[in-house]
Amino acid sequence: MKAKSETTSKEKVIAIKGVTKSFGDYQVLKGADLNLYKGENLVVLGRSGTGKSVLIKIISGLLTQDSGTVNVLGKDVNQLKAKELLELRLRIGFSFQNSALYDSMTIRQNLEFPLIRNKKKLTKAEINNAVETVLDAVGLMQTINQMPSELSGGQRKRIGIARTLILQPEIMLYDEPTAGLDPITCLEINSLINEVQERYKTSSIIITHDLTCAKEVGNRIAMLLDGQFQRKGTFNEVFDTDDARVTPFFEYNFIQ
Amino acid sequence: MEVKNSRFSQKFNNMFLEIYRVHTFIIKFFKEAFSPPFEGKEILKQCYQVGYKSLALISLTGFITGIVFTKQSRPSLAEFGATSWLPSLVGIALLRTLAPLLTALISAGKVGSSIGAELGSMKVTEQIDAMEVSATNPFSYLVVTRVLATTITIPILTFYTAFVGLLGGFLNVTLSESASFSAFVQSFLESITFLDVIASTVKAIIFGFTIGMVGCYQGFNSTKGTEGVGKAANSAVVIGMFLVFMEEVIATQITFMFRT
Image 1 (tube, helix red, strand yellow):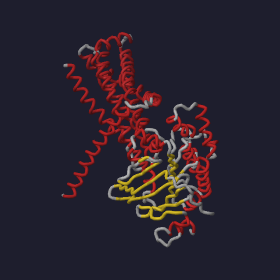
Image 2 (cartoon, chains in turn blue, purple; image 1 turned 30 degrees about the vertical axis):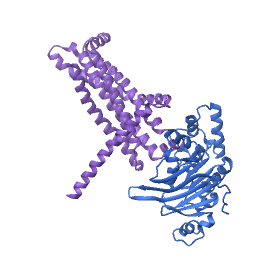
Image 3 (tube, rainbow over the protein chains, first blue to last red; image 1 turned 90 degrees about the vertical axis):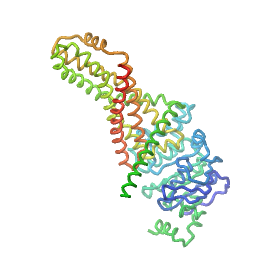
Image 4 (spheres, each protein chain N blue to C red; image 1 turned 180 degrees about the vertical axis):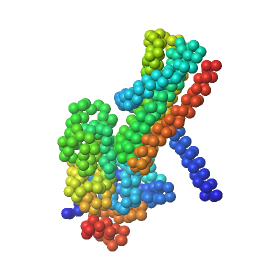
């Protein structure tokens, strides 16, 4: 398996500067700086509880940072009014760790929901077409009338990704897309992330512990250590080190 | 002693913090309820859910209450030869207190707990966050619709309970003596006032608002996984019922002031 190379674009779609965030006395982010460039897949690695998920929640405006700035598609997320934030969110797709499918709705209703809410001028036929297109993209057309509880973990992840794709976002945020899945499903999800990057021309941040996923989908890797991104670069650049905080990741994933 | 004081002050602080949170939640409700987009379709769906969930239990409880109340009241009235007052007595008791209170308590148990559990489950499984990031205002879609639904539906259910209770009362009366339903209703209508109807309606609206608000607040702010969902459902019932009783006492005092 060969690691992906960096993309050539230097146009920033997300610029994070000096972001800090504390929960009570515990400071998780201690001045994090990170850029996401147009068209790239950026993998964020780090130990559990180091603030990776917190970071993407700050990017999408679900949490507010204590200090620092987060600029997404040219807009400072903290300075946006409620309506402007909703408009920005239409351009960001967020795939949750546990998929967060609406469990009282069928898969069709789950996928229709963001469209019905946000694109009120669409006809029923256009909505159906959009639903079928994204379901086809994730290869789960047969599940259209099923309930989320009837799906496997991998299928739920795919539907979660399909639900974010239906609004055709420019940025995708994946929170541990392969967590809790078997190796074959992990590989399928990795391929899907790469397919989404190519087909929908998205720029993505992928939070993961899974180095196979990182190597397969990431154009760049950023490693969160002690609340800051202390190592950034391609997969090989990040892991070409004797740093005792980094090497266990590599050893656990590829030697064990 | 110092540790005890510090715990007491911590609890005191938490209490005020909670009051502040509830206050903010209520303010947000009124702000969102009067700002577009208005969720008419979802409100109707929730009204149907609230009515449908409680109807069977309310019918049964209201009917039995009517029968039992009439049965219990008859001997006392018979002592004074005033059994003809039964329709008025049953009607007034049902309309002024029993129907609003019974409906509210049943709704707090059935609807309040269901709202608390549903929103709690959505919260802990990140469905509310998912709604938010897909550019939908979850407060407007989930909270405003449910609170409006309980505020609209519970007054309707209250009058339904009063009607079913009257039927129960009439059934009991006809078992002991011959009476026509129209005469029974006529006697009831003659004994109630406009103030009784208005007071019951206002009270039922307040009860409905309280039950919806408590259920939504508990669910929307639940934490700690499945344990939190159970706690949200439980708190929605306990706090909802407690507040309904408190409001009943206050409403009765205020109505009494108007009556005198």
